[in-house]
Length: 484
Ligand code: ADP
Ligand code: GLC
Image (spheres, rainbow, N blue to C red):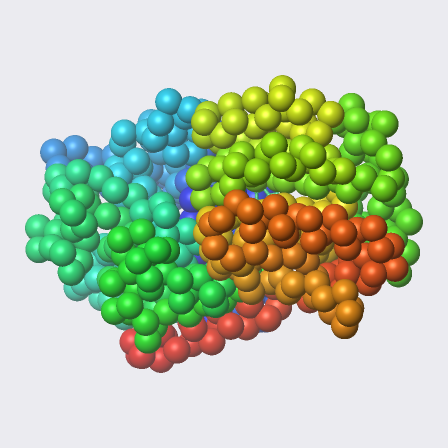
């Protein structure tokens, strides 16, 4: 099949979270299965320098808006691992400091930016290759199916092309004022409760859910959760309505980038059979946080995360005093909302030899934490899939997680008697349950042979992209069949 991806993030070009890892890995896996994949991304600031001999594929596409046109260039980024990359170049909208905004907030013209992106992908596809299926990701690309099934309805080239939407996070929907309908030249009849209107806002993601042929999310548990009030962020009834076309496909991980036996960013290599190198990684990590004196018997707990409400850090704040009584150190790497940056900075000041924080985005340190920590903490309020706990399983760093979404699907509670399981889980939102899970991990850590078994159980798990890629192909084939 010929598949066109449209997304707002992709490693190594632009990343704020796991979406970039997925868009960076799944297409290459699909080509391995014999499909042809093209990925469209916005040409953000700094991307051009990352391209090897970029060429102009289309010098100018006209993207209409009420009373003015914008003109975008399509840049040919060439082939990477067999995947064709094209970039939508519109400097006045994409040549900016951030992808979606700055610390001061989201860019006010995001509807125009990502509305233009979707239209540019449709127009470019007609010239550069009409796919058998469009696969769009999150609200930023969700206008593509809306346009496809409304203003492009009579397009003889595109009208039969199906579209699959993957929801990586239902908490981000792209809410804009009602007048966005006119701004994106859509008919007003899309602005109704059963389509894009949501409590008098214009909702990109809702549009994507209504107008896509199938919807996927990134874990089976999250596919069920988003149909409930607690996790649907107001779109639960829309997800329920599409339940027959809603699939939960667990993300894979890129084992070439995240593998302790080959990782160039960590201090020593190790594997399930030969774990010794992990000790060197631990020393190296403690050194990076200026905590060299921590004894080997003290468990090192790592966190790498966007600092957002989703990630459940208020639960950690609630138990911080109790946690500081435990024999452990907590090492944090994160950036994001000022509120959580401040929260962690204050915790460090209060417990300087127990909690250490690095605020920022640092891929090298992220790898060092996965490898050098003894255990990895992810107390997310909700987690569509979560990649860090999967990386930590691979790195022999058992995860401690809240049993939600992909965390529920990827981690199995350790049982010291049967020696089964891969980590530690807690349910609900009671901070004491998080503390109890941490304490179970600290106890288990003292039993070295048991702990090594726990590490090896996680390291033996198979999260290669091959399986999820096959599941996506099954979805593509199903929607293509239905439209043919
Ligand atoms: P989300 O997409 O919700 O942020 P995931 O667990 O799916 O959560 O993906 C997070 C990705 O971003 C991982 O690849 C992780 O290593 C990376 N990441 C998050 N925060 C940082 C940071 N501060 N520094 C480096 N990498 C980070
Ligand atoms: C989102 C989710 C995360 C998921 C990632 C990739 O950012 O928050 O759980 O792993 O997308 O699908």
